[in-house]
Length: 82
Image (spheres, rainbow, N blue to C red):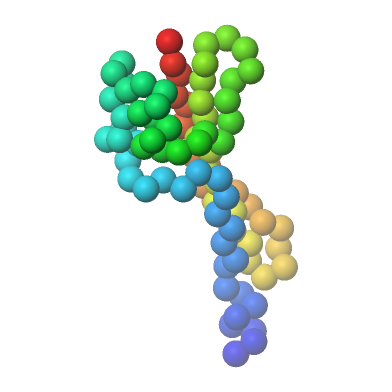
């Protein structure tokens, strides 16, 4: 029983947790900063220079037994304001 439990994948989700399709929550060319903030929450990161850009980053790492964790999935959504 312990051997089976040791082989189960350990999952670590980090960053932005999407509550639906981002494209359905905002309208390109019409949604304001406040609309995006209300729909998606605070961004994971923001640009420091140039046009204002918000990044929503999510990653999923999986590890089996004592092996090094590997990134199974990573999503980055960029929203640029003009």
